[in-house]
Length: 139
Image (cartoon, rainbow, N blue to C red; front, side, top):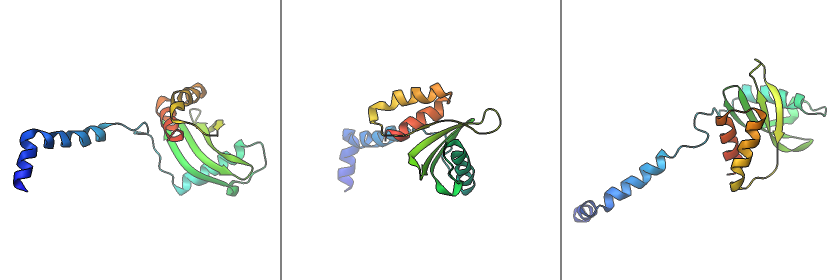
């Protein structure tokens, strides 16, 4: 076994094998720096906000928050509601209180990322949340 290891090292194969994993580990996720921790308190708070944002009379207990991302004053939650398909609800807290901005639903392909990022930025979302959201829905 020692002979094989010395052959790998002397031929550079061993060094090359070490470089590939390091390079892959250095690739940054678009969600780096975005808070994606979904706590019970956040589920409760955003279930209330999603229920209020809908045109129909929905009680917060009928809203299921399944995902959360927050960067700066922007928050996006993935919510399931009984009256519609699941969607990503966008909120901006720059006024001091979360304000509903829009909801995104549907399917996205991997190549749709740039257009989805552009759509989120048009709402006013910051780069971090727009990129994380686009990456999430195109995975």
